[in-house]
Length: 306
Image (cartoon, rainbow, N blue to C red):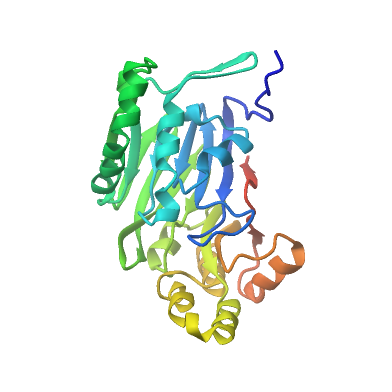
C-alpha cells in the first residue's frame, strides 16, 4: 500500500517546554497566516491555547497529531481564536491510522478552560455538533465519553497544576470583549506567557516578570495610520484595532518593564511579508526600548526552552 505517512512527528515526551506558534494571523485572511493558536508541549502532554480556523491543519504540519490534544485553553471568544474548535474536538476524538502508525483518539472528555463566558459559548458550539457526534458514537463506535466536554472557567488564578505543569490565568483588557485573559505556563524551571488580545495592562508586566518567553500580540501604528490615510472610507474598520490591541512600541515597553528574556510578536496587524526586511520595518523602534531578543513569529515557528 502506498499510504502517505505522517512526517516530522514530534517526540511523545518533552523534558523541557516546546512552544509552537500555529497561527500568527487575525480575523482578516492573509496568505501564510493562519488564525490564532499556540501549542505547548511539556512532559507527555500537549496543550492548545486558542484554536482559530485551520488549527488542525497547522498541528499536523507542526508534527503534532490532533489526538494528542485533550486540553484547550481559550483567551477570549473572538472568532479567530475559537472558530477551529469543531475540527479540533472531532479530530482529537477519532482514532487515526496512517501507514504503520495508529493514533488513538481521546477516550475521555475534552477539557476546556477559559474566561467565565466559555461554557455559554462553547456549549452552543457543542450542541451544533450533535448530528455528527451521534453518528460517530452510534455508527463509528467512537468512545462515548469522548463526546463530552468538561469546563473550567476562571479569570484569575491557577487553572491547571498537574504533572509538574502549572498554568495561571490572569485578566487583560480587550474590551468590548469581556472577560479576556492571558496565561502563564510553567514547567521544569521555565516559563512562558501568552497574551491573548489586549491593550497594555499592568497585569501583563506583573505576571511576565523574568519569563523566558513572552508571546504577545501587536499592531504597527505607523502602518495602520498609513492605510487609513490611503483608504479613508475604511477608517472605522482600520482604526478599531487601536482601541483594543497593543502597539509594537507598547509591547516593547512591557517586555522591558518585565525583564523578559525573549519577546515573540504574533497576531500581526497589518500582516507583514514573511521576510527580514518587512519584519524589521514592522519592529522599527522596538530595540530602542527593549534590548532583549525579539522575534517576529511566522506560522509554525517553534521555540525550545531548555
